[in-house]
Length: 167
Image (tube, rainbow, N blue to C red; front, side, top):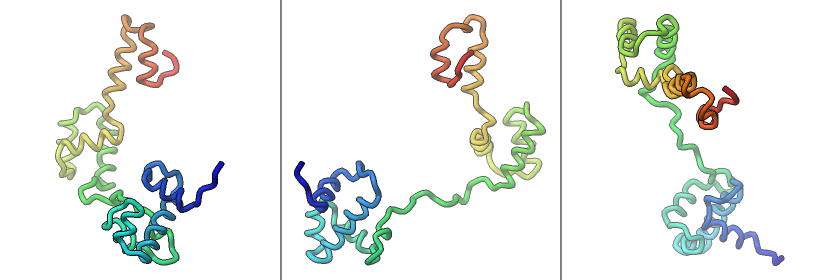
């Protein structure tokens, strides 16, 4: 098997950056592009490595010489959201739901408002879904599986949907 230079392998893999398995390979590619751009210019580096000039400038701005991990992608996930439910609101919802398990959504929302809950009913519904209070799909499947006409039939379908081992 012919042996390829590491730079050639990096160039070949750069076109398929989504298929790269390791982070270090991607970082080495960026570092190679940056060192090439310092030596020959950004335009030639962009042509050589098949990236835009703006991307090369972006990498150069972030690059700290000697620290390859400065080129590592950072998380884009927001750390917080100003409109997210506070822990006190979630605790109020959980405590009220424990005391009123069979209350409908509208009446439950009104009771929460009397105790200081200020958000709209759709926000309450969304939070209660995340907390696991509303899961109508599994209730409907369970009800359908218990019908006499359905029992014993379509078990493979139910096993796929619900993940049940046996009925």
